Length: 201
Ligand code: GAR
View (spheres, rainbow, N blue to C red):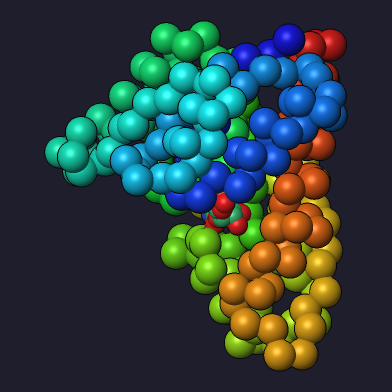
C-alpha cells in the first residue's frame, strides 16, 4: 500500500474524488495519509478533516517569506515526516521546484484541466484553461493527469479524457463539466494505476 500525500489550494473537489474513490475501493493500492494546503481558507482542508485525514498549512509568503526553495523544503519535510511515497497535486496552484521535485522525482502526479499540450503551461490554472479553450473555439477539451517535472505541465502523461464544449458555455459551466466528466474520474483511476504499478516494481 502506497502512502499518498495530497497538496491542495482551494475547493478540493479532486481531493474529495480521491477520498470517495478510497471509500468505494477504486483506490485500493494507496492510502491518503495527509493533506497539505498553501492557503488557510481552502475548503479542501475541511473535506480532509471530515474524512479524518491529518492536515497542514504551508504558505509561501506567510510561512516561507516568499522564498520558493524554503516553500519546497517545508512541503518536502512534511511529506517525509508523514512517510509519503506518492504526492498528488489536486488543484494545487503554486509552482514549485527545488527539494520536493528532487526528492519525489517521478512520484508527483498533477491533474490539469485541459488536454495537454493545449491550454497549459505557466499561468494556465483554475478557470484560465477553460477561458482560453472558449476563446480559441475548440469543440473538445478535457483533463490530463501527468507526472510533474521541472517543465510546467510538461511531465509524462498518465491519462487523459476528452469532454465536449457546448455552444453558450461559460468558463464556469465548462469547468464543472470537465470536472464531472473527466477530472473526478481519471485522477483516482490514474493514482490507483500508478500506486499499483509501483507496488509491483
Ligand atoms: C481543478 O479544475 C484542477 O484541474 C485545476 O484547478 C481546479 C481545482 O479544483 N488545477 C490546475 O489548474 C492546476 N494547474 P478543486 O480544488 O475543486 O480540486
